Length: 195
Image (cartoon, rainbow, N blue to C red):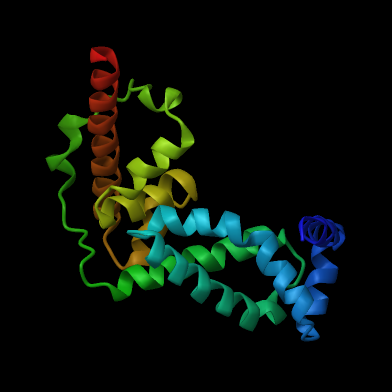
């Protein structure tokens, strides 16, 4: 069984994205499985950053890949396939978040500006897994805006348009997310010093 997986993963690696897309469009189930396996782990990590838990992330991943396969005909090889897939996954996560009425984006910028210290370098020493746990523990509004701004690179204006919120609300959510992370990082640092 181990040899089969190794041989199979080698075949997947050898298949170029263009050939893979073409084979998927022809309805080749092996190519569809190969496309999923090639990108699923990375895209699941993206889903985990946006969603509340593993189950919601898994649902978003599945919904995202359904959209990917249905829109694959629209991929024109004008960019990197992974980037195109990532954009669909992020939008799928945002759609799921919008459907959940619990997400609230109603914080004033003035409420959080005093909490921020822009010289904070605590995140540099943090392990990726710890950072992912911290991001996932954020309230929904903070997490979504933090991901879109700090990780995906959207502007606050673009975030406002995507989420149907005011640009200043996006800014305040981002500042709150930073303050949230800073507070948690200080607790981690204090805990490590006391051990």
